[in-house]
Every structure is written in structure tokens, then in C-alpha cells.
Image (cartoon, rainbow, N blue to C red):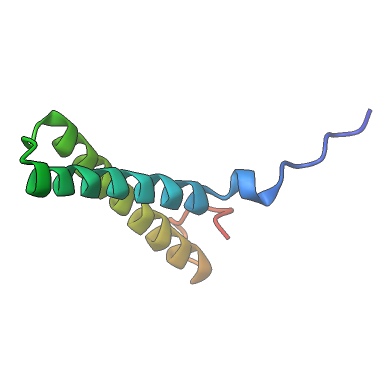
Length: 83
């Protein structure tokens, strides 16, 4: 019996998925900010949640980049398979 083919790179690229998610969080946050400035919408839990989602996405992307740099320079403690 043959092993199944690997999934396409677009579905396994963690950086791409996290980048898209982070961009969506930012766009929704910016929409709430504009709604607050233009329509006097209160800054509530939705605004805070989207801000935190955006910041956590940025944190995740920075950790991915940090681990990728460590793996490329050959650090013993770096994760493997991040290229």
C-alpha cells in the first residue's frame, strides 16, 4: 500500500495562515476604531478582543521568525522543519 501524497504547501504553511488571520484581526479592529470615531460607537469587548487577537498574531509571527532564524543558523534548541 502506498503512502498518500503530502498536502499542498499552501495548506501546511503556518506563517501564511497566521499572517492571514492576523490581517483579518487587524482589519476588524480598524473597522471598530473607525466606527467609534465616525459613528460614536462605544469601545467595548469586541474592540478589545480584536486588538488582543491582532497583537497575539503579531507575537506568534515573531516567534515563528525567531525559531526559523535559530534553525537556519543551526541552534541545538531550535525547532526542526520550519523552512
